[in-house]
Image (tube, rainbow, N blue to C red; front, side, top):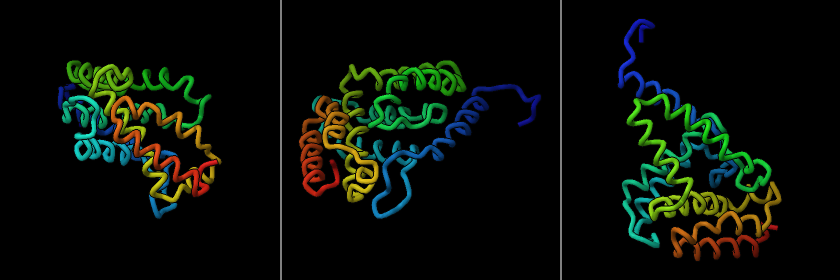
Length: 199
């Protein structure tokens, strides 16, 4: 785009699309099953969005699946600036919300005003977990890394010496969105511990 071209809604949207492509470079702490490659945040967002569609019947409450999917596609965009915060790093999580809120202001602010407000509202809703949609979205967001680590033979947990209680504590919010997934999470945690994958 020429430096003299007018800034239009489309150019702002394309600027946002260009910026969020960097999410593919943000590595998480979960290894891809049968691989030495870490999952990136864009892959995680796609995976949990698909889970929302496939597993919607397991939500505790009536949900709008489309809204849940949008929320899950938006929720980690802030990691472009803030990076991924380790689920088991208590110190890193202290300032996580502030870092991510600053990132949300900048990144969603690239969009046209109405769209920026809509995206920010969905991101805030996910963070606050006060709606059925947000509670189910959060449940999926916490279940996915547990499921991925289990499918990978617990390698990521073993290497870092992750404890059973750490995984259980981090997974507790799953119950708020889906008791079915919470029971499955507890089963996976117990089996992982029995196999020696969790301390």
